[in-house]
Image: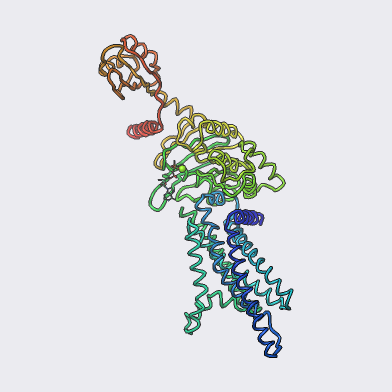
Length: 255
Length: 322
Ligand SMILES: Nc1ncnc2c1ncn2[C@@H]1O[C@H](COP(=O)(O)OP(=O)(O)OP(=O)(O)O)[C@@H](O)[C@H]1O
Ligand SMILES: [Mg+2]
């Protein structure tokens, strides 16, 4: 446990002493801000219209703003997660510091979990930025906080899963850029797999669609925490971390 | 303390280390000497549990590297060929991180960091970013991280490479000062480094062990066949090198004389002495009595290459006679 924290702390330090963390934060803030104020503007114009037409049905802030916003945030994550995950192991392999980690009295799993936790923490910091925006909704409206919490849990689970996969991919190469691009491609595939479910009902299409992160994230965005979605993300996290540990082990045998 | 038996390492089909055997006693400093690609780094990486051997066994303090890697890692401090530094960290921040990895209790950590900073003379740069350090300071920080947990065994891969002469001297002093409390294996290309720092030497070439001896034995064995370099010039007129060879060959204890270089009236020779003879004074007298100028006379230091030739030749001779 102590070792995991030591690795995690070191990794967070290097995120924040390199441009990556700030770049990710800036990109996230800009994109999220755009989506946020966009949906606020849309919401306001719809409200004004319906008031002009004399109808005063209660507008649902959760349904109209928060849900689409959560879905958009998960798309932003798709682009930022490869950026966060790519350096985890590739950089250590390139600079030779992997030799320090692998010859220290710590377990490979502790290295992997520590690094993954640090990446997840950075992503959580990004989500905090988004919460600052969402705070406005609580000032002016009365959104329901429970579905919001479920949505954020979903975002964290999704990021955890994709970061674990990214960490694994990063163990395979010395080149951060290659790791980043490959992770992005894999994330994108896990995203678009859902589309085949739209026109095909064969078993292969269904299983591909099942593998899609979108299908499992959508319920969270609606505020529904379904155990089978949680299990999906948790298994992806476990798989990614497990493969990373095995890959580190085989690195010893190969190198 | 360290025991290596029949150690072999293959990369795919390439044999990098071929059935090496050696033992290192507690408190010894052993030099690992060999040219590029000899397999020094590979052997060290196996000892530090960075990679497993293909065949054979290696153990440190009685713990096998394959079956008890944690126990081995706890007892080893390792300076890899390129010091494993994080450029974005400050020196003391880095040493604190390594201390945590090595399992130093948090109550001792700050004190240990201060101690090794002092010991490796990096106290003045303790607050500097590692990316801003010169090569020599990086090497010292690398050494500091290797000794931070006061390990029983130190494995140093080319600890003096890339340093200036003053720093080389200081690093050797530092390594010597670590002897006794630690068992040390260091690798190098430089023969004189082994002479100056180590008690024992293991010479490997192309993955195979060529010699394993105490430094004192090895040097006397090699010094026995010392070679003297001479530069001789005609006092007046011209001088043929054959003339000189004929004259020098008559000196007692001379084995062989060869011409290394010839210019007009001036020649460089190498004279090989028979084992156990110091022929320098006699050579000088012979040259002067012949009326030539003796411009230079020195013991030609054996280069690493020559040591290998020497050793492999004598091994072959031994093999043939057996
Ligand atoms: N990861 C690897 N894959 C394949 N071959 C390798 C690998 N690492 C080393 N080798 C080969 O194994 C041999 C021994 O290499 P090693 O690095 O142990 O030599 P060395 O004695 O440390 O040399 P140097 O003095 O240059 O550091 C070399 O021929 C090298 O090309
Ligand atoms: Mg080497």
